[in-house]
Length: 431
Image 1 (spheres, rainbow, N blue to C red):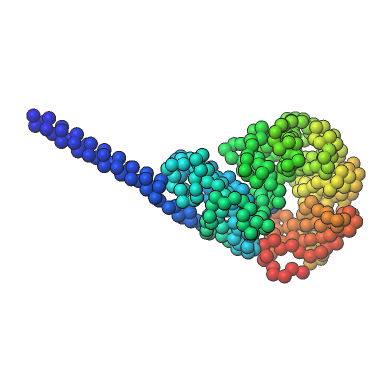
Image 2: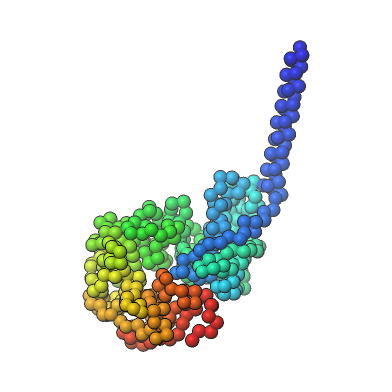
């Protein structure tokens, strides 16, 4: 009898503990799902290192915002899990030492009824919070290092374009700033594309790993620079390497896709520089089969929009290529780093579609000899050419990111020094 009474007491206590536990769990769930207001600045500061080729305010902000969102995307907790989608940047203020920039994005919560992110904005029936706008305060903390220090949320759920500041909008393609409405993201092993500022996304029919084949060991969360074209008129990706090299192409915003084979004499591809100079004419510069500081290269051309490719040739050197491309179907340039003491740029030009190449002298001023050493791909506007020459991977003049600027009035045959470009504003007034 005593034992039965003891059992009843035990069961009573057990049920009390269970009930109290359920009440606590329910209370916490209601609190975090309905009442709790999240401190979005709690994870800050976040610091990242940004590749020197991606140092625009938009690119820096995109990388930091993406790192901020990663824990929310990867968590298994349904109260915290979200799927954020970038839309646009706008209202940039400051310089690359310290700046503020507004980002607009959508996010979809994993559980629309119970989420810690309820304070972020109005949640639609499908779990989507639309047009969230945050002001990101960013500061440079070292060479190539940037930190997200503070986030100030603005009102969400307004339609894009309602701000009087929208004429300052900048958009991002991947991690690259552009005024176009096309963008991409690599998420959970899939390459996703948008042609309408992020309103709709499609998945490209390609295995992401195949976009990084060959002699490549860099990051795989952004596409290899130069390896793709992404516009409303044409989308193209260089896929694979060696005998499996192909071009994946769509001309209807991802509605239909075609895979075109490319006969490449290079097996272990390092650089892949793709571009189109007209609807039908395009080029693909491939480099690879590297041995120390020596490698092969080839220039391929197409005259049918990428369906077929023909080997043209290349400059008569075997240095490691650093950049290249064509201005039109006939005029092209290739850069091969530097040589000599003091080091100076190795820069070639063609005027007959790549059949013949001539070395072009870049007249580095005496006081900058050995400082500006690697020519980049020039640009041309209204007959005037602009060539930037960087400091190479080991440059340390004024922090290493200052460039020499040269101009041409004869289609790139000759160049004249025109001053310095100081993207990080480390020099004050430049000569």
